[in-house]
Image (cartoon, rainbow, N blue to C red; front, side):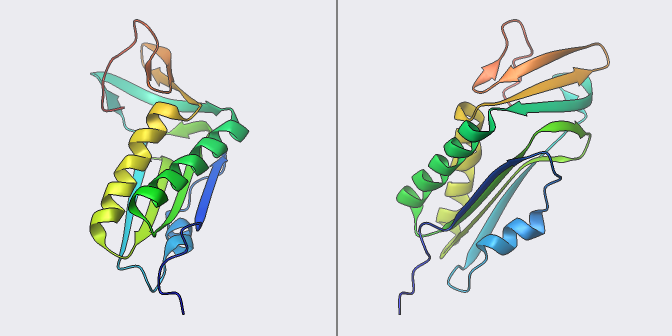
Length: 157
């Protein structure tokens, strides 16, 4: 009997529906995994000294899901065997809502933490998802890998 995790166990999605973290954790949970690490990106109220009212996300869905799948396969190749679930929201999101959720299950915690961090950092740089920040005093679109020229340059986005 093979006692390693299925290295092709991935779930990725771009959706307008609310993200349900417990369901995604359930998709990666495995009795052969000693660690499940998650990351939840949420809509925060303050960014670079500006009060956020809400966010709007848009995506090129087919390409975004292909890029998310590519990220999952990259981390499986680097830190596998592990299971991965990555979901990103689109549409209108209010303060406190989850915009992105990543769950990684691995035999040991080190690879699970490393893979989860790699997933969010790579997603932010490469996946065609755009965020419109709406503040009390204006708006700006944020594109993968950085902000529009002249926009807020807060690296913690």
